[in-house]
Structure formats: C-alpha cells, structure tokens
Length: 278
Image: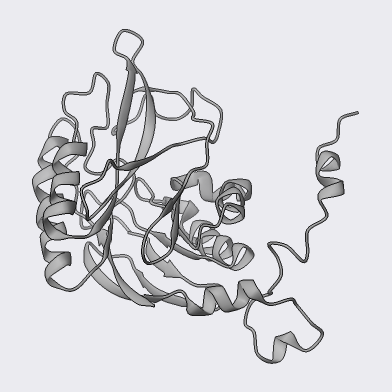
C-alpha cells in the first residue's frame, strides 16, 4: 500500500524563457523514475506557459514522458480560451503511466479576473473553472487544487468528499510574508480532510524561500525550502483507518487527528444556513 512521491521544487525559467522548463521537467521525471517514484509533482504553472498568447503546450511532451518512465505526473500549464481577449484557465494536469488521456483541473477560486495580470511572471485573463474532479489511480484517489486555493477550505473539502485521499496543492512563487500561514494551511487541509496534502513551488533565485511539503493528518512527513527533488514514502493505510473510524471519547489516546470529520461530524440540514441571506 506504500508508494513514493517525487516532490520537485525546481529552479524554474521565468518568461520569456519558460519553454526551457519542459526539458528540465522531463529530466526530473526520468530521475524520479530511476529512484523508484510512482508520482512526480511540480509547482503551479510548471513547465508553463505563464502568459497569453501561449507559445507552446507542454501536455503531450509531459504525458509522453509519464508513459515512457511509467509514473504519474502532476504539472501546471494554461488552457487558452481566446488569444484576442488573452483569456485562459489556469490548469493542473495529471498524466498517467499507461498513456491514457491526462486528467485536468481548472482552478475554481477565486472568481476571475484576478492576480494573473500586471506582475513579473503571469500575464493572462484568468477564467475560473466550475468542477472538482477526482482521479483514480492504483495507489489511491487523487484530487488537484492550486496555490492560494489552500486558503479556501471548501475546495479541499469538495475533493475529500468526492473520495480524494491525496490532494496536490502546488504553489506558484515565493510566499514572502504569507509563508508561515501558507505552511499552516497545507497541514490544516490535511488534518480537516483526513487526506495527505502535497505542495511545492517555483524558485527563481537562491535568495528565495521555497515551500515543499508532504503532510498527513498526524504529522509532516517532509518539508524543504530549497531547490531540488526529494522522494518521499507515502502510505494511505492510516488515512483509510482514520476515515473508517467514528470519533469517541477516548480517541485522543490513539489518534493524532479527529476521525469522523467527513461524515460523523456533518450536519447537512444546516448547509443552507452557512451564508447569511438576510
């Protein structure tokens, strides 16, 4: 039931040189496979592109590498909508080791347009998606969410309620003063959803601080602020054990996280009262 995830925190090429990230990503995939990884995770918008009009599409190249090296690969790109209007979905993709069509998640939160204009990296008119797909693998169910969606607990909860046991939450760039709260929330999304959460981000210089993490509800398995790739052992048996339990008076004697939060604790009759409609 255990498997390995290669968490890649790359020293990335920023626009206009971002197409170079494709070759780097394929080399990481090859290395991860050689080190026994079953999954490889990359940051938001890696290997790109970061801007509209999109000058390349990495999906076929990364999907081919995933198939060649027999690993799942989670990566980021744009899905252009209109070159005239510079509109696009910000996309997370899951490529499969058997070569089937990759799975896709279009960032859903916040409403668009948003922060992807006027900065030094992204430049496009963001259009949100409306779906929360979950992807079956032989290792477990996978959900995808993006970057500061970690601040929106409903996104990870929607994935967990659809069965996601592993939630990839790749980030974009240096978190600056948000670093501490971001780190807290990566673990919090794991605790409250009884899922494994995994994040990483792009680095563009040695002076930047990374945030690569693998968290379970009861502990942080791995974290790094540095560029590079680390292979982390994952086991879903404890996740499934916690999800199968009801929380009881003495559960704290044996559990480091609250069981039952996905079902036992729920009050669906109150859902329409969460928002004040007056």
